[in-house]
Length: 157
Image 1 (tube, helix red, strand yellow):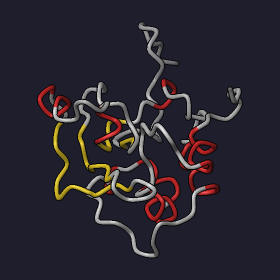
Image 2 (cartoon, helix red, strand yellow):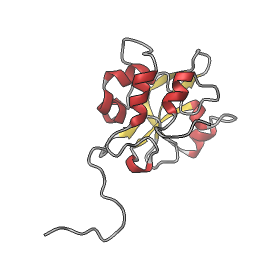
Image 3 (cartoon, helix red, strand yellow):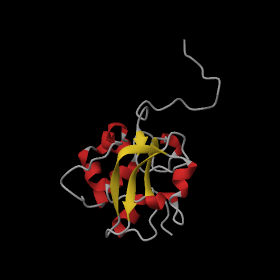
Image 4 (cartoon, one colour):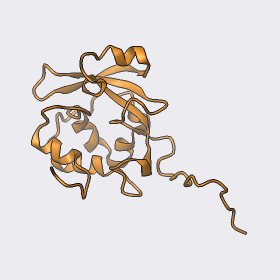
């Protein structure tokens, strides 16, 4: 006998259970800041926090006059099918980042999101050594980062 779901919410993809997106918008419930973007570096780089900090309105206001995603790297539960980078079974954003963005270091950064990170679970150390360059909202991204951030099939306008 087959169980029938009475609501129209799709069954959660088991491959996303418990994993966090390391480039999430701060509005997602359960979001945490796990890094601060250093705009003095060229290109900008993420400085990882000793411990993730829950996103609150007060924390978001600290980013002013910038947009919070220009200042904070935010992790939140992976949204799978709700995300433009989701292929149906994995994150295409990290695949493009690993392919297009040069490694920042040979050493993995001290990131506290790693135990639940979707990118680490999917691409391992190859994602970690590039993650420092990922700025979720960057007004002047490097060409390879702009290309990596463009979802597959999206028109380039």
